[in-house]
Amino acid sequence: MPRRLGIFGGSFNPVHQGHLVMAECCREQAGLDRVLFVPAATPPHKQAADLAPCDVRLEMLRLAVGGQPGFDVLPDECERGGISYTIDTVSSLRQRFPEDDLLLILGADALASLPTWREPRQLLKQIRPIALIRQGVDDLEALLAQPALGQLFAAEQADRLRADQVQVPAIDIRASHLRKAVAAGRSIRFRTPRAVECLIHSRRLYRPPSPSPQPLSEQPADRD
Image 1 (spheres, rainbow, N blue to C red):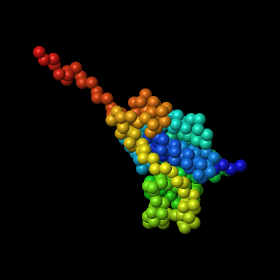
Image 2: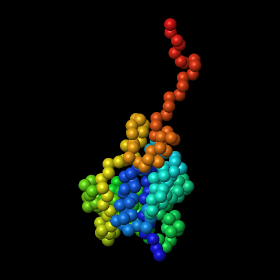
Image 3: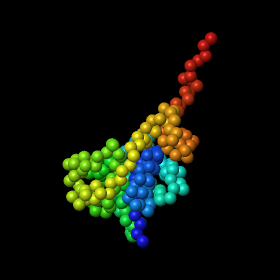
Image 4: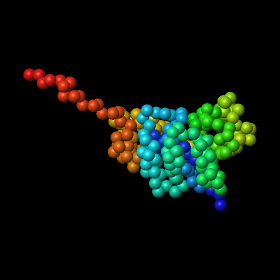
């Protein structure tokens, strides 16, 4: 029997509770059998200087979703390497799961940027998107009114996007906020799973590099 699989891509740098809440809302409201988290090797739109290595982000994701029914982590983009284009990932997963119904999970920001992605029209021929709409924050009609996005979707596709939209609570947690908090020595407790928090601290992720010790010849001399 075909399964409904939701593809949830992103940098997950790091994964946080907002990602998990969105994935669970999508799993439940869209009737998904599995949510497949796919971390990007090098995101084309987010090439941050503080991007953690892909194997580390995979490890954080596995810690975050471990034991959670309906969630899986796929290393496909990390193993492929280079810049991660969704069209390549979807084409690969189409071959890997030929009998299943694949759906692409997109937050409002990702949906707005869809016209700038590689081969967006071809992508929409291969997979149906699901829009994650934060209650009181995002407006799907306003997004579809944007000329570039409105031209990308045929009327039938836009109607289906409206019908399939997933409502999620407006949780103001961003990965960039967590990275800045860690760099400043502030707590990130409860904003990411405890196991992920411990890994971030044990690996000293997102911290500024320690200053190199001065050579002996450059150290200040003792003064009487």
